[in-house]
Length: 450
Image (cartoon, rainbow, N blue to C red; front, side, top):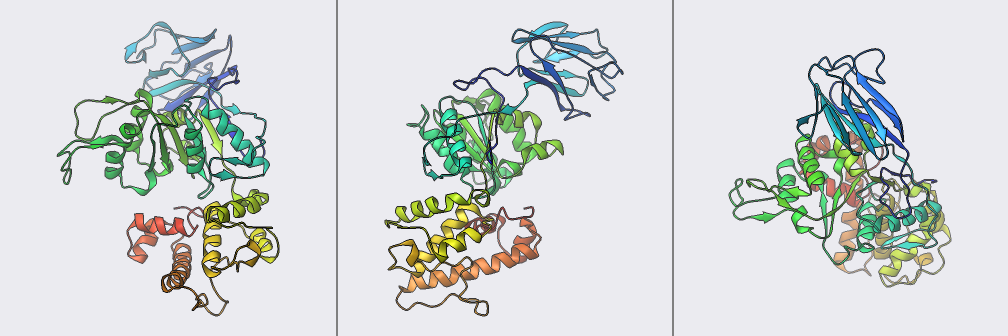
């Protein structure tokens, strides 16, 4: 699929047939991450600690030949071979039972799940160059538009992956606006920007008196999005405790507000997003594998701008159009400057560059009349942009502040090793505020870890 990667774990999308390939995955326990293929319609997997086991575990509470899983016409027969500690499914011990795809089995200290093997979703690239607020002419973007249109036809859970500024929220909104839920709420929660205690309250709500400062009850995002779509952004930084509560909400479509005694059912379509590689986080234990499998039913990757520079012209034209200007031909030295840049901040950084150029050239009516600058500096020796008496006071001052912010934050981010906590301590800023500043200037998502 070129620069866009889309994989699917489901057969519920229109026109998508069921995958004949499944697997048994250890989602928790000493051997977390191990897997064994389970082919349909007559594949067999034996699980145990003995040498002959297809899926051999090291869990000392698992018997040498513990159980067998056999694929049978859309169901899976699980037979426990009179193991010492037994096998449990949905809280009850089983001896010989047929279970559905997605079933989770507990044996010893290990949890196994029967899941479909993710496979590439092949789609015909869209002929459109627009999808909601996203625009693009590249093959990568037109493939993404086709997947978005396909996803919108069902309630399948979607995981969007891509660098900062690649348009994950715009893609989520496009899915919502093309779906049957478009007249209902679209609620966004930036999970990476909130501390754990506040994030739980934002997601699940709280009752009056649940904690200091809770002077009244508050509905969480799941409830506010009832009937519509809930967009969970930046999931890669969510704590283990919140992941556990999210898993329950995603599986049961029910939430319990902080401090409440009972759950409330919710009807939401979930679109999640991360700029981190969640597969890698699952492998090293930082992200729950069971939550990942629940969220990545349809997994879509959005390509960075440096891999689709042919989209620069149409993106600039759209940005200027939204500001009431006809861009005209996208060409000349300014366009060559855009083509030569690496765009670590992707579309968000491009928007900042165009906004700054338009502020510097308020009388410009065409792209070729803009004085483009990628760092806001007037020259290598002068750290400040040129002062334009023709601009209003506030406009001129905002340019100077913008240049200061970018230069200061760029140096701070580099000297802090791209570590948000270290950078916040150096700058004596709140982490949330610093993160917002870094995003505004397209610095978050550059090489390095946050």
